[in-house]
Image (cartoon, rainbow, N blue to C red; front, side, top):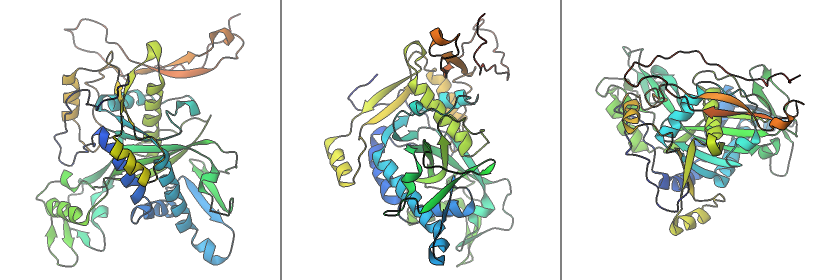
Length: 422
């Protein structure tokens, strides 16, 4: 479904009762947010984040260079800046997507059974994209004492060790990727990039073809999600104690971007997705890939619908001044009306959610969807010349409506074609 009108949420949005919860901007605000992201990604401290991930070992690629000592010593800085520049190009070319609450929860519910199909280029809804989620698709918890340790603050001695900061993952940008995307200007191939894999460093050939994913979190650290009046830190300059309210005020005074990069992942086409380890890019990639699968299903298997939110003329002029190459229209992605859960179930899930972590979805989807391995060319099935792909199938509740629901954790996955018929 497409419509050239101002988009409205599929229902009144229910906000988590937790302070500090992620509140997504309206779909019509996403093009201007994209401009801000393009401007900030090359500026400190945001560009420094890429370099720190290279130095810290969490970047998906390891840069090396042959040359004089002054060049080899600066390889981490050069590599981080090339990644930041590549991210800006990715954002400028991106098709924009805004995923509503029910669709986010459907992708999470379906991704609870990890995808087993190889990563396919045709699953990408666009060659370059920026997708914002109305609820977080995951999060990463950070030790509070470590977060409070800086040149300006120190954690109080009696800090509650159970308190942690949750950094929600609320967006993803992607583009089809090859090693040439990180070449130095005028010196192609001078920097060699080696992918990190669970088995260690792996060679990267010029023929590599895959998709680059960058995950985005909130610019705010979420101090207001902590007990507001409890002393948390000591000001290293004045010696006074700081509460969450004080830290929120400092953050607001310093100013922060709405979104910032948090992690990256590189997926090779025709290879399996990585094992979804908790609270990192491998897990979030399964949610994103599942969302792509859901968006691509059509016909009787269709589970989603999209609405086009056009960019007004004055906004298109801003895009042109900012060198934006991608379309200004936002694609609002929803669960199809045939499969949309009741509003009450959505409200109960949201009310029970933390707001800075992946939301509850068991009231929306009391029986989670499952994956079906589907043959795309049955006529060639017997000869083994057919191709298979996964399709997500919504589960149906059987039995009397007035009886309690019985669920099980057992999941049946058919991941190989049947043997040829004699």
